[in-house]
Image (tube, rainbow, N blue to C red; front, top):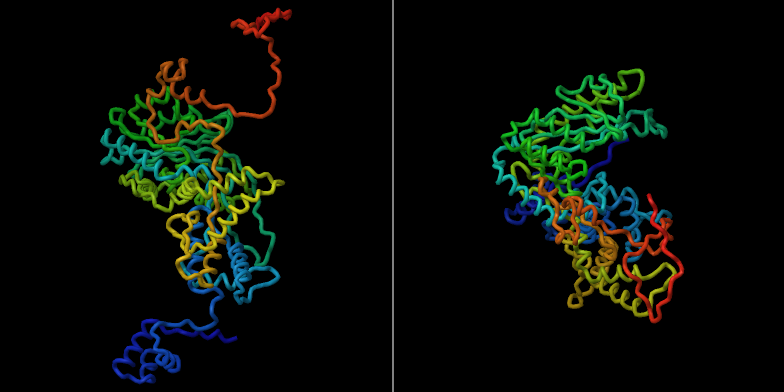
Length: 572
């Protein structure tokens, strides 16, 4: 079978040069056709139409160029704010749009969806779009990574670095983080099998035992030997075989970091950092096992400044998360698959851990990778504008919903209505007016989430093309994020913003500050004042013995003598 012939192999530039030669230099169409490689009839048609731009041959696309461009802009915006569109949903939406607007199409009427051939050509016409694998982002991270929190973090970081003369000393700036490593594959591997086979498996444990890796690197690209935390109680020295030089390992009940183990790790860090007379900055997350009075005293003795990152922002502000831990998982899977191919049994345990961990860790912690992580987070070289604008897009969506009176009204109405309750006549008219206003809106700014701030376009010509574009915009509106209820008070997290750990946080608070009672420290004050969750259930009667009241009883009109004597307090 002969290959399919390709048309329109000439470029737009050659067409413009040929038309200029015909019109200005009086060259014949035949001579221009042979010189510039354009078919004679095609070139003659462009001369008769007096056109200068290249017209693509073949069948026209189902949607117009303006509608496809609007579709690309809205899809890009949805992906920025954390609601990317799947190809299947896109094909369904395009089919519904064509049906509602009576646009001729050749889509599948049975499946009610556009075909994969249309999607392939659509992606070819818009090379800015591509199929990507989305990463999960929880709501807390989407809300917390905003410009206010990040700006406060960089201001505090700059103040600490200037006060301790750390701006030009990357060898004194460290980042520490824990990484959970499963004794199995982290991702499903791509393997070779028979074409068309539906049962391709690899044998192994579904959920391997978790091992915690404590990594630490400096801004110069130097990585100190890690600490390995195994789960268990009995320590076996053979588990330390084949680990990197200088690496230490320990045991905990759950295989995770604790306050005691963190103190041991600080002593381990002291062996590889500059002397305690020179202050060094250690950037880490504000986990509870990193905060205690003993840790603050030890850090001061070792010459360490513990700088905690804001909560739920480590995916953008933590250097090790950005450049080391993600490639480590890929290197680990590659080494594990290679190890299984060389051994007769596909068994992975603590004794074999070092055989896989050491080569994977050496590849992931290369000096170029580590330095790239500090640079990407804006720590060294210090650059507060290093975090891209697209990283704040999910938080901007939350702020837009909060300040939108229209969105708050609709959310309030939806909360007040139960599933069996019908909206009142006044509420129905209000919703109808909002929908009509949205139908007439024609401008949506893709750079800011202006879906909730539609402008009236009654002054402009309301053509059928504008109607179709408005309907397409309404189909691709950004979802509204429900805000947390404000009826119940919630305690602010202790590490909600960037902070430096010092002994002042553990100084007793005077009674006037702590609500009339002496509190041991600021840390305990924040943890003790956690509001209790309100409940509508009736309180159960107390099973403890009644205590005699110290206050005299407040009698009503006529005092009545009580026959029930108060019970004696329990000796317990």
